[in-house]
Image 1 (cartoon, helix red, strand yellow):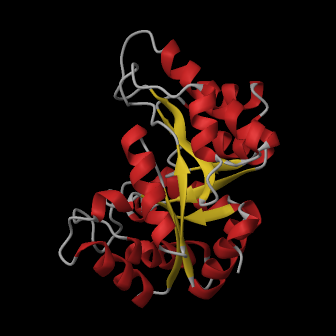
Image 2 (tube, one colour):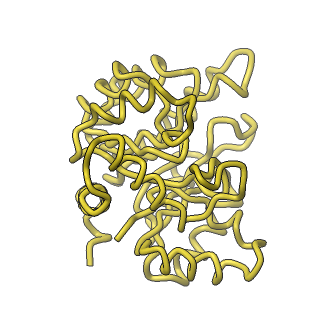
Length: 257
């Protein structure tokens, strides 16, 4: 069985057959749990509503670093949302210097607020980082994020960054990007990662893995990430599935049946 550790189900509701069809396809492909990730205030409420409806879906709450700087949760607002019993994580949060320009101290302040809430509620963090690896890791270390742990999602960084994340107790989640032919450095990192710290994800509807690259991504396709990792690492798909599932339940113990 597979777990999709990062998906935006609210963005798949308009697919043919709606969300029910997306989830049925996931079940048919042995996906038995999905962590649905928020990126802004509106999606937090949408995703909590989805998680309330389905027992095998959990939620995160947070504001993506690329969301405009005037859209923010106060510490109290974010903490109140995060107390919901289906919310198991804070994020996605982090830093993105690729899509945002200028003085980005507001991004760093937003990131620190998410870390503080995660520490207060003892809920892991879902981290997004793009062209900001050093600042992202510096802030995680400085703010004591090892107290909560979490996931560096859709990992595309180098081995040094992976090692810093592992050193503070974080898990590394690999997406369809690892299956791309031009992802040689990432594939080298994926070979080195300890099996007990790997998670798999889709980031659906984005970044569909080979053989569906360029199409709308869905949770059902997480199996292709596992299949690629098994071949890359000289392992079995069953072992990758079992290990990544165990890792997810270790990080989020309330999700274990």
